[in-house]
Image (cartoon, rainbow, N blue to C red; front, side, top):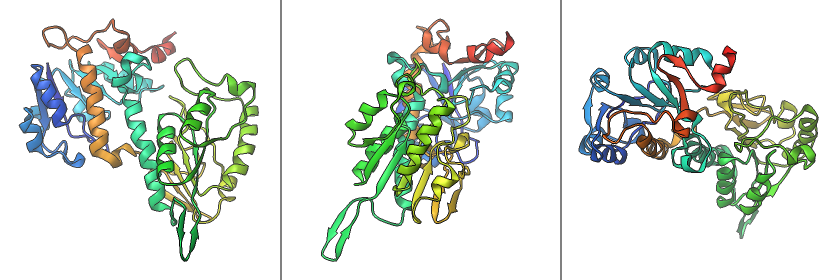
Length: 376
């Protein structure tokens, strides 16, 4: 199979969909890899490194010419999409509820696989890009908080006096949240966390953090079969908000990570809650791309309100481009066997549950169940 890797054209995107390691693996397996010049520079990968691994370097047009598949981080721009007819596109496509985007891919004659739709099953864990990127986002969110915060995280005892440890509160204990908890703990903060999923309580405790939640009957049933959080009732949200409001007032650092696929981020931190926090406190909102968990969040801005800084970085994995690219590229490399036949030619395993789960468009039609429902 001929695999194309382009420079990402989405504003602010620093990641790349391949690394010399994965290129070497592809080439060693008999595949041809073409990489656009400069594609890896923002991820600290020079062109020579790709070339040494066996990739052919060239312009975007030369990279796409005759390619069977384009591996990308984000949805390509319109000019690129116009060149992809007959190709297989594998990327983050922001597909949830986005019928118009899916139809545009189908109309362009592109068979598209959305990395967001990798099923949450054991055999697909090594292909799960949402988890690999969320893990780094959780880590980076705490590092950003430490940089913005004007005080130390750990307790420090000196001859001049004692510096109290920072109090950090993580909202949402999924992959990103658990990594945020672990990172804040490693930095020496006193950490607490909340989540609406019952299974999260034990996970939070295992990392040495205190669990904070209204643990009623609704809480005990608040998890989907796929492991995602369910949207809670307005009554539960009101009870939880009251508990969280009193807790947040005592925190120095708040990291919010709550997301429900395909929906706007739930508003967990109100303006009133922010106003109870002491000046110098920091909120890092990992849900900024979906509107934010804090009502004062603005994507890609640091907003200051009453001395509290709210950071809404829209692409935290992109702030660790080398590592996030390496993990994402490995996710794609692990997916490759399901995209080719025994002879190595392009032949997606359309009957495989992983490919079925990821398939957004095929043969000029939108095929993912979450979008085809609207046709009924």
